[in-house]
Image (tube, rainbow, N blue to C red; front, side, top):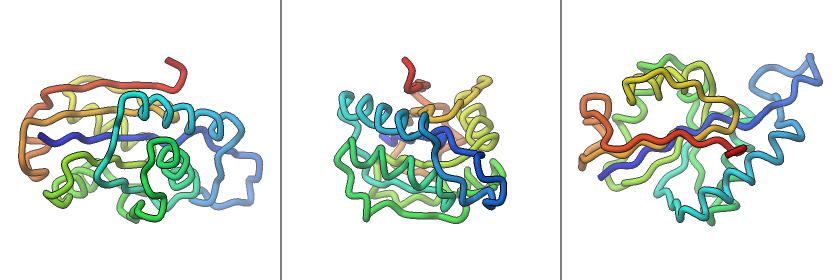
Length: 161
């Protein structure tokens, strides 16, 4: 069984228009929502084998805040350039190339790509708002099957639920 979590970064700040897009930090709501989502995941006993984040400041900060709440070593979060400004096919390639030893993986990234990927995997329209978490379960031993096999389970969670 493989479990994939797609986590859209928490709400970011646009207060400083001089900052490049990838350097935008989380705003106050994002700093509240990310730990809140982490607490929700901790209550469900979510324990990823691997966490992979976009290099964008807002995604990396979201990953760190959630990791702290679920007991994942922040230093073990992998930053992957391919999760920033990616096409859905590129994201699917990242998923399919994941280490087979990892059964539960969390990816932290952006929209519209994460909504599109969640839609492709679930077969339905998915709108991932900030700090939403899409969880997919697959009856497979290999990440290379993802996108070919339909998920055996799909949920979409938001920090406000």
